[in-house]
Amino acid sequence: MDRTFYVTTPIYYVNDVPHIGHAYTTIAADTLARYKRLCGYDCFFLTGTDEHGQKVEKAARETGQAPLELADRVVERFKGLWDALHITADDFIRTTEARHREAVTALYQRVWEKGDIYLGDYEDWYCTPCETFWTETQLAGGNTCPDCGRPTERLKEKSYFFRMSKYQDALVRYLEEHPDFIQPASRYNEILSFVKGGLRDLSISRTTFTWGIPVPNDPDHVIYVWFDALTNYITAAGFPGDEKRFQQYWPADCHIIGKDILRFHAVYWPTFLMSAGLPIPRKVFAHGWWTVEGQKMSKSLGNVVDPNQLVKEYGVDPVRYFLLREVPFGIDGDFSRSAMVHRINSDLANDLGNLFSRTLSMVVKYFDGVIPAPSNLQDVDRRLQEASEKVFPLLAQQMDELAFNKALISIWEMVSAANKYIDDTAPWTLAKAEKDRPRLGTVLYHTLESLRLIALLLAAFMPSTAEKMWSQLGIEEQLWEQNIKENGTWGGLEPGKKVVKPIPLFPRIEA
Ligand code: ME8
Image 1 (spheres, rainbow, N blue to C red):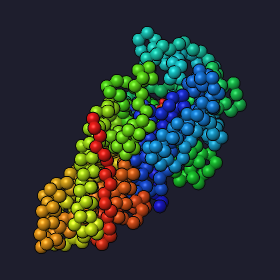
Image 2 (cartoon, rainbow, N blue to C red):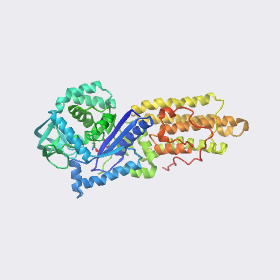
Image 3 (cartoon, protein in one colour):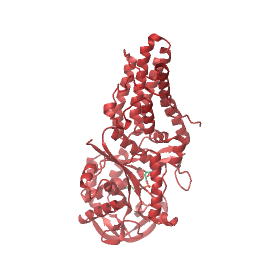
């Protein structure tokens, strides 16, 4: 294993409890990480929590806790949800950890030594909930925040500034030379024109609160929460102490984020790194936002969906499947229970679940569970084989583009092909005559082998379903030790081994 792949989620604020938006990003990153591992990469998958800043300080105060106490509690909620969703993060970073404080301080120091930080006066319109200063022209009507719509206030403070303006040309050049850096393409264009419109220096310290990492040599200031938060990606890669590890994993291959925080990742972050002389991540992918039953998800509306509840009701894999299948990654989507139930019943229970159980039942019934050997192939058999082999390179390309929904559609084309194959070959009829027994064996072998390949393709998306399929197919090798390239070719299933009586993969849900 020499090729590495480093994928991240945002680190989530601990002033809020996890909801389907957080689950979405993390499931997407987990699916990509699992897929890359199955392709033989040495994958490093990072998630974590963003624990400093005014928002967290305020939320803690309101509930009569110390900020760290609040963080300790909420972190458990995130970790618990990641377990429930079968997330395989290799590291969970908390910005209150010593390793992170060290990294932020070191990054700040480097930028300072470059001459890119100066002390100035900052005055502008400030949105406290978003912790963002806005210029007059950026404000929405009635001096409200253009992001969240809440009132802003005029605020002046001494602040350290990062000379972001100095990096405008370099960033434009970088973007033009790396048209794949920001995805989807529409977001790339948005950021490019924003940068061309002019970069202002960025205030990177605060004196109005204390919950943060102190500015080196001026402890009256704490480092701005976004400078602190973005640094997490290099902290976990070993910056500044572990040079070997840092060389190995940095730059990150993919930062997966929501569209709400693209500017921080695609403008601030690369300019900090340029100043510090560190490589820039290879890709930032901004996905869309979920509404719930047609409405914006909000605490005040009381419509925030708890993913734990969904897992309890529908099971973990159906939740993972729905979120990645329902909406193209990069586009906004709507979560509704009826859509979810529909997907489970039609795609999962009908198409895949039935295919699996009827195939295994026939093998148990006609061959005592022993996998029959194929012989005398016909065109219909070869077509099924070709259909399955075609999916692997297609999926590789779709996963490179983070086109999760297309990838699932491709897998389902294979599921349909296998269903059609059974209908066309009608094994239940072949079972009636002893002379057709070799043909019956060939047909069932072909269906079983496509199910093996489907399980391999599905593993990254629906890990426990794939594991169940794998073990019921009687395969002894570990699923997670498979290599999609090597084991994803036709004919891997061994005749003579035994399958087991099927246990339904997905119970149908009554609407
Ligand atoms: O922004 N639909 O943390 P955060 C889809 N700490 N995704 C959603 C969503 C929705 N309705 N709501 C939230 C922060 N998300 C910073 C990040 S990174 C260095 C610092 C997801 O807790 C989406 O991934 O507000 C979004 O980017 C993230 O949650 C914001 O999480």
